[in-house]
Image 1: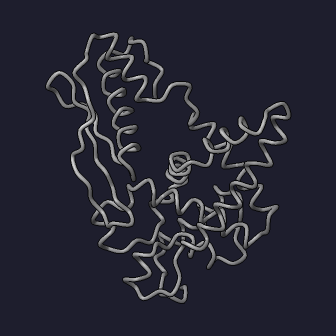
Image 2: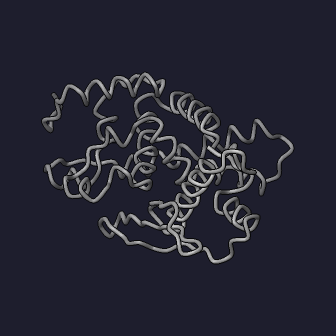
Length: 247
């Protein structure tokens, strides 16, 4: 049992599995617990710690490590090319995708109110917790351990095929153009969640019909997810279409 009373067996088993997947076994497990504790839980449960400070640290560790890796891997790239690639790797979307793959939302300690508002599906909260995990690894095992974990992070991103030559919104625009659909757009369905962690929901509409919906921590991210879900929907209906490889 931890000092704040956390002792659910399923959660502790989840922590063990997460550490195996992460590639780092914590000597100070309380650091991992802190990384997975959201401010909403701390305020409701009267816990004196949450993951914002670790998020701050993890953001710096991630940027430094990715910068070093890119510097070594691409000796011919100039500063602008390196900066652009680093920004792509450490953005909220990739961090959230990695965190979801690692099942971080399943392990997050959230306040009851935020859970009811869909906090576990909020990409921003997942991305912040991912950075907090990197900060916790750095404090627990120093820079060498953080480097190892972040290199594994990059491998996972590649397996998730995060890098796309054309983003989903552009793919959808091309697909609609090929089908001579011009009256389409992204419609905001609503916002939920607290002011510091809003969740936007957007729907693609075309030809008077509703298509895919998407959620995100910003309207831009929600539109990106709505476009991706619309592509999946359309390609299921037309599996031999020009974007049948979209996953």
